[in-house]
Image (cartoon, rainbow, N blue to C red; front, side, top):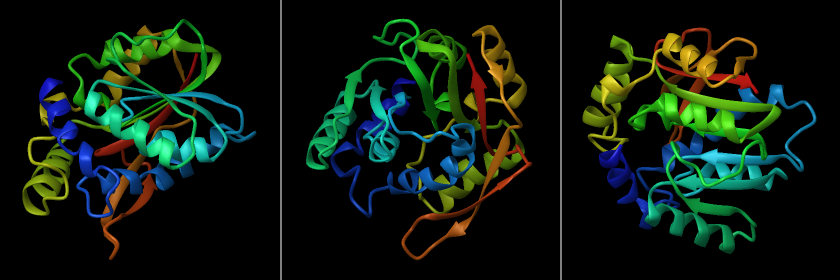
Length: 232
């Protein structure tokens, strides 16, 4: 949504700074991919990957370092500029473009993996984004996602706790009404011609470490943040 783009775009200048409000997003790569890696037994080397809603490049760089050939699409021009600059500074050849998830500037079937992490709860039409992801995925390709369930627990944790009390996330970054239930997600996948693979998992937050990163654990509880995989 436009408001979300402005909120995160305002963080572009300090996106990669250790004390940035966005730093907690970077710390989630490890627990997320502890789940996702099992679906790529051959590893990431040479995989052509698109990161949808790439922000300032946290996940794109994480995968590029692991050998993937990465592209990123992001609506915020300031975040794309930040991502491009940091990739150059890091010696990584990542192709970043400005664009909306609902209308991505890529040909059909060109990616073997598409990631969309902490994004679907921020867009006006998650179904359209998932449909576009299905379009750009090659046959047999994988869609890796996480989003936030619309429950009383997610309202308490993500909005009241992280935004208003702990102030880890910028206030107003989330709207509870935009959160996506697993049933809604299953409907979007089916409409896009994508088939779920395996069981979805929850990602529970268990406090913060001294360096500011979250303590997390994978669980079968999908009542807050949850992750999943689907195949084209």
